[in-house]
Amino acid sequence: MNCLRQVLTQVEGSGYAHHIQRLMILSNFGLIAGISPQELENWFHSAFIDAYDWVMQTNVLGMGLFADGGVLASKPYAASANYINKMSDYCGGCKFDRQVRSGDNACPFNFFYWDFLARHRDKLESIGRMSFILANLDKMPPQELATIRQKAADWHS
Image 1 (tube, rainbow, N blue to C red):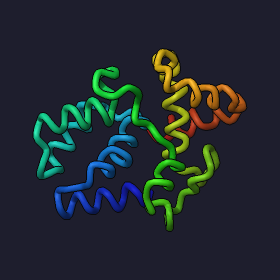
Image 2: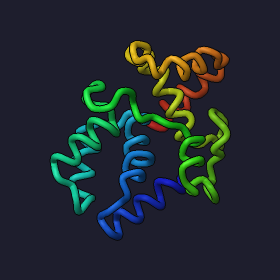
Image 3: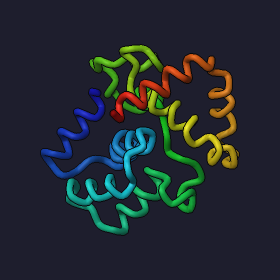
Image 4: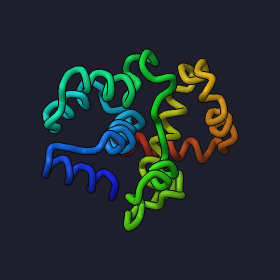
């Protein structure tokens, strides 16, 4: 994944990444892929030169990973490849297709995003700002959603 490669290479070399890179790429991926919030926060603490508790707890756990259940952010900061493409140039040159949700070349941000919505649907329904995207999830053909969920599960094994 070009976006993760570029951001992680930058962090490894400098111990720093812009707030949007931390939120849009690293935290977003951790959230939708189901990475343990505490493990990801621990990694942030070890990787970043400005990893102070007051920053990591609010930005990583609260805003980025929604691990506080919505105290800080009004909805999960979850996004697919479409958002990453609109907000950055990381999708250019990536081997994954940002426009595909479930095929062999599907960007992992896409299938993890839709799997995240399906996994947490019961909790997300109570967040009014999520109703539009959950309606899109409802319109997805059941077989495609099953394929997406399997693809996400395969990445975890």
